Image 1 (tube, rainbow, N blue to C red):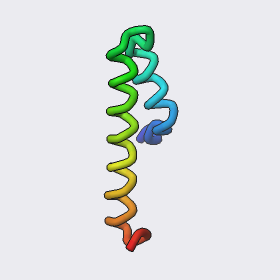
Image 2: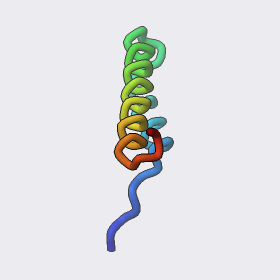
Image 3: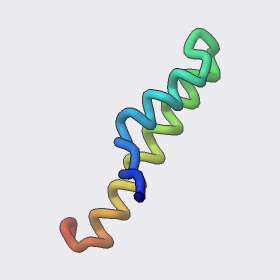
Image 4: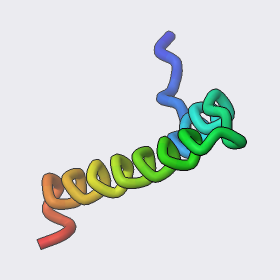
Length: 52
């Protein structure tokens, strides 16, 4: 049985928990993750033709 794809929100929160937020690099990593998510969403929307 195929397991359903993980909820992106829970996946991201797990990623963020792995990062040390107290560390300044944690904040930079958060920004990078946010930018990646926005770019992925944008390309997905353009790909599906919802954003034209």
